[in-house]
Amino acid sequence: MPSNDARNLAQAAVPTAVVGALAAVVSAVVAGGEGAVGAVVATLIVIVFMGLGLYVLQRTAVSLPHLFQAMGLMLYSAQILLLFIFVALFKDTTLFNPKAFALTLVATTLAWIGAQTRAHMKAKILYVEPEKSGHSS
Image (cartoon, rainbow, N blue to C red):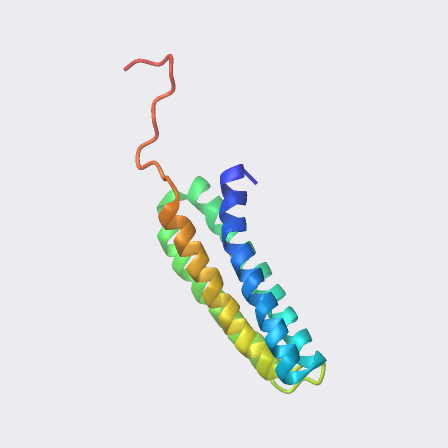
């Protein structure tokens, strides 16, 4: 993964992990150990899903730039759908507190989207590729 891609991933994953850690503490206080486990599982799911999505989107931007916008819309729609499926699958689980899981899933997803948006706004993205030195037109 090129350094810019790794930086983009870190700029979204770190704030998401912080929100997840805070959610785990709050969930532990409110719902006990099951609440903390639910918050941790939700945080891991969001970081993995969104991280893989970011990776796929960055690879698409390089290899198929004409499909970038459509791929982004499709990818985010699929991610949100998968997160809803996770909430539905685990709504009656006894492994962890489902309410803490669902609330943390929403909070960390919003944290990821906000952090990714901020990282994109602060990035210095070239609109035109500069010419290589030594080549004159």
